[in-house]
Amino acid sequence: MRTLAALRIALLALGLVGRVAGAQPVEAEKVLAELGFPADTIARVKAGQMVHTELPASNERELGVGLAFRVSVPPAQLVAEVSDGLLEKVDPNFEKHGQLSGDGSLSQLAELELGELAEAYADAKPGSDLNLSSAEIRSLQALKGKPSSALDEEVRRQILKRYQDYRSSGLDGIPPYDRGREKRSGSADLRSATEAASPVKAQVPDFYATLLDYPKKPGPGLEEAFHWARYKAHGEPVFILTHVFTLKEGDAYGIAQRQFYVSGGYNVEQAISAFFPVSGGTLVVYVNRTSTDQVEGLGGGTKRAVGKKLLASQLEELFTKFRQAADR
Image (tube, rainbow, N blue to C red):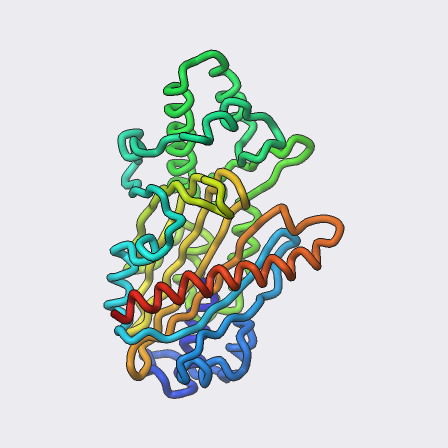
């Protein structure tokens, strides 16, 4: 989800969407190249295909994948369906999810339960499979011998605090994961994913500023929401905190989905989507950048290539269901 209005300019040049007042035409091939999509993407999408492409990584831990396809409903309707939880409905990996609002509260997380994760949290230590800060680990270790309900409550408190810290300080409010000998900064990985979108800064300065400097520079007309979820990632349950925001530009929409906390499996994730009106519906452009330690180190290039193919395959399967549901 990133070079949004850049693709909008490309579509302007191709005559597929109306021009917004003040927008300057840009060479379509150049913009599509910046996005990392093949030169024939628009023609293939118009023919009904779903196009996916592998994107260059912005850091050594990143997997980057892009998708483009068309659905038969207009952008405004598609945004409404996404806001109503369309992705959650078609993705069977969502076990539980809810919304966080305002300053948040433990009651908003009441349905979040550890279940089979309780043992891992009870044995939390630096370098474990859980993504936890040093302070979070110390708080969990202090609960040795306490009833399991105390563990559930502490994890809810930690997740609530991560929400509150991000909401007040953005990327700067994300504490790093304690890997034992080193720290892993989800903030740094999200920042590098955002900086990979810098070519569109001149085209959509408000969207880019919101993405990079939230909450300091919210774009005009910003609509946002925060969600928590218990999710199956590669078959294992994890907790996720997601910030979703939407900005409308003319008849097109840009949507950012930032997973600023993931309890295990991978580090963080950022996706940017664009919904553009085209003949017969909406052109959807989706770009995903996921940070995972599993592609670092010896053989990282090979592991990254395999990881990108796997991620692309999973996303294509999910968005095929998404497109079918939206087209009904």
